[in-house]
Amino acid sequence: MALPVVAIVGRPNVGKSTLFNKLAGQRLSIVDDTPGVTRDRVYAESEWESRRFSIVDTGGIEPGEDVILAQTRAQARLAMEAADVIVFVTDVRTGPVAADHEIAAMLMKSGKPVVLCVNKCDSIGDPPAEFYEFYNLGLGDPVGVSSVHGHGTGDLLDRVVSLFPDQNGDAGPDEMIRVAVIGKPNAGKSSLVNKIAGEERCIVSDVAGTTRDAVDIAVENEFGRFLLIDTAGLRRKSRVDDNIERYSMLRAQMAVERSDVCVIMIDGTVGFTEQDSKVAGMAHEAGKACVIAVNKWDAVEKDGYTMNAYEKKLREDFSFMPYAGILFISAKTGQRLDRLFQAIREAAASNTRRVATGMLNEVLAQAVARVQPPTDKGRRLKIYYMTQVSVQPPTFVFFVNSKKLFHFSYQRFLENMIRDTFGFEGTPIRFLIHERGEK
Image 1 (tube, helix red, strand yellow):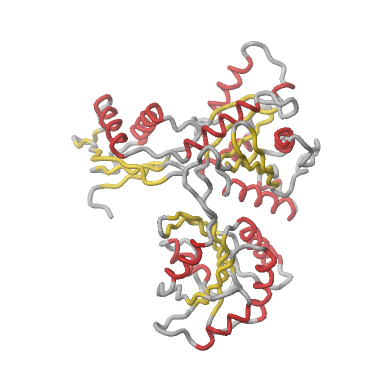
Image 2: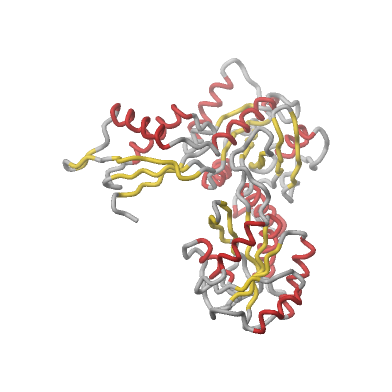
């Protein structure tokens, strides 16, 4: 299941980025006394009370006609739409100002759970008298925090985690799988969603760029429960020439971020393009399980060898993601949609699969016995042990005597051994390398 999303919002210069860096445990977002430094959304993962979640830092929300301000506000609103919990950051030194009241009214209309954070409560002990003025915002009990010193962040995270939707971790048979349908314009994404839903839920047209918003559609069938997310087609940035299309792209990227599985749609009548590679790369970099669906297969002239030749060519084009399954479908006729759902379920299960450390190290010992680790100038790579540290995507840590000796080719060999033994079809795998004595 996708991680819960926590959006940090507020007016400029209240300490949102400082709080974000504190919760993320590293300096990811730029911090400066100048208002408006943060413009785009910045993402990171964090964990509290054994619950992992994504946090999003946003630009300050403030009125104004400036183009940059308008885009920053739009970015913040997109983050709020995708969030499970919103942290509204205010400044105890200024008290609740008019902009805070406007933001509070907007958050109440959103219907999302909101935690009111009163920042810059730097002194230990009872909060200052100004702290109690924030009850006037109508968002319940505020939490006093010092994002610089870390005071109160534990209480803040306790409140945030208590508002998360229930989550059992791995994708069980009855759990809804979020599926983002992505691809370049006019690949047939909306047609596929309509066919699966059994009704015209999305506008379909030969005009590229018909879909603008990311549309969520819940579907239940013999394969399980799915939330299909129809997205706008992703163009090259040089081709994006208006604000509506720019935010359509942002919504498509957000759909990838909150999905469990990405179905990468390719127009079978056109074939692979550079843009298909960029779309797939976005899902790969996000660590999402992926299925490549070649659409409009009913319209392709073919013989007994066409499918094999087409798949071989796609394997070369998508060489950076050999784990992704390739299916040839028709959204118009419904051809092979049952196999598409099977592939989605398998990919979602692989993306959340955990393997015991003992079993991993048995496979590691067999791999080392089969192919000796590389050497350099008489020094041989030693892999002491490995363990899996996270899922979505499955991430493994190797403890070694030297990072430099752990060549990419040997990492690829070990990845192939792990896949051959445990599966992991449809999902990327991440490796982290630690030298002995390294913190």
